[in-house]
Length: 336
Image 1: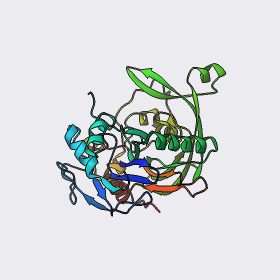
Image 2: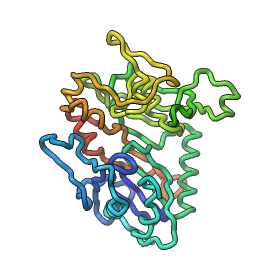
Image 3: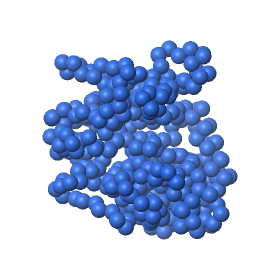
Image 4: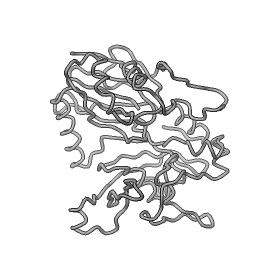
């Protein structure tokens, strides 16, 4: 996850990449002091307590991930260490839960940090934070206006187990949140009625493009044009190509005699993703290691408004996490 902190549109702070979700896997990048928003951080250093391993797989097949029992202090240290540009002026351990400590650590005083845009809880990629209410409001208006105009501002990279039939296109589906066995899950709704829409069903839309294929998998570029919980994961399941490491929704795709089909979402419980033996060999993983495979869904690119209304949007890029790059190498896939 690469975290970007904004204070003013003319005085910004940028934080380097923090890998994989809200809480696990910290590998921090730095960049020159004058970097600004359009940079891609390239030089990596390890925050205190991290143990990145290269070479033989050993006990850590997913480089760039840290143990789940990360302390609050270690998370705050890693976020603070990720600052690459400083121009201008209790419960589960999550990014949200440590924002007060991060604000103090960055010397923001009484200014509170808020999340403006972020990838999902289990995804990696960019997180946009702001300590300036006016800036946060301007950014939200930009995202809302772009969404209404169907101009994507976020681009994700995903590795899918399976190859979409079409090389590019749109995925449209009505989705709702349903409480199943004590868990809130996203469920597709066929032909939603007006009553369904009023009760929380939302029509969702994503663009997709297959970038590369190999070993029965695909590297897919995804651009959501709506926002809904687990939208991209469910959209890829509807294409019969679940995201690699999706241990929540991939069980909805069944296989009989090599043919894939959708199982009923309401009656299919989440379970660890099962990969065939050939794919496990390509990934150099045991079944027990595959059960811990991180979700390969990464918010790679985000557009922000320029300083003036007619300026070209500013592009933010987050490099792929080490475990994601390792998977691409194993599968012979290349991000162009």
